[in-house]
Length: 442
Image (cartoon, rainbow, N blue to C red; front, side, top):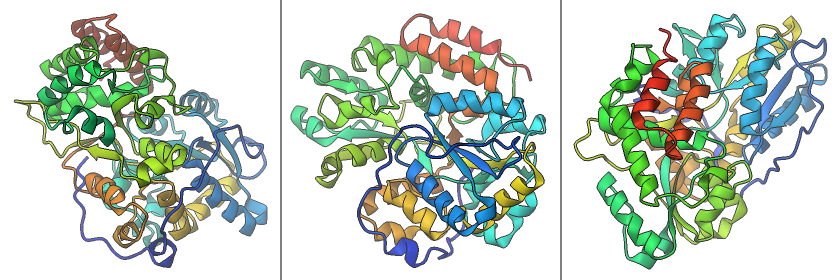
């Protein structure tokens, strides 16, 4: 996805510009309200992902509900992985919530092919909606030229986060190249520090490693061939070389011991970074949010650093290319009642990523994909970090969507399992390619 955009329009006024400091805490417990589905005869509904960003979603729906007595949304929270399984089942059974939370890519295409989501092209073309979002981010919600999803969350490029104190302890700088990264491994392990923390239990945190290495080695064409269904595309030398480098890093002790059982939903993986047990992690902005919520002093004291993923010597990929999620999206369920669909459309037009909503996102460390956010970022409590995220996403020559979402659902599931086997050294890079090639049906 090309991410070059035109000059931003100053749409965010006082609501964002006055934002200064503070992080809104949000628990990860169960639903705050009983959630009806779109198949019910009641009001509209939405499912959200638990975590620190959930507060921004809940605030937005609370505000809407207070002003719309007959169109109140019922909200339920789910952890990331359980949600992904539950929503597929609900969509297939025509019992999805009115607003379907998604990532775009292959999963959205599968919903469109099944007739499970509404065409929102007319809504997206409305100036009240169109002029709100960064065009490059909004474009991810399109399938075959029509809009089926609209942005609902912050921009999410993956970068390397690091503990500055630990780097100072061994007298090193963050790596700019893959060789520099590998050279740091024995220095950190020799000092009793894990070079990287990662959650292998959840599987999806392993994906950016493969995606970045494929890009840095072979450029965007490799994943373009895979998502286009080119036969044997997973056998591209860049994929095999990427998996070899992953296993070389594992063998060298690059990851914390026992990473396969470490949780990310609880924040256990990121905790190793700010408690001084691991030097680095490759993560989405949720990494920053987790640290800022759990240990705000660590961020305030300037101990958290962040840099782009290293260049692979001799590789074809542009160092400015990024991996992650352009953002998350709302789609409207085709199984919803006309009244539920209308409420969802009105909510999108008036409340989705409006000034208060965008300010709430930024308050928890999540940069909204809206036009004219520069002034609000400059007035925030961490302008350097927020500006880095905003500009990284906005200017990237290519923004690769998370691989499990870029692929069709079945292929994405197989990738998660097979990549975990690579990290655990249970299969070879060649076996990985064979397994994944079998998922290509195009």
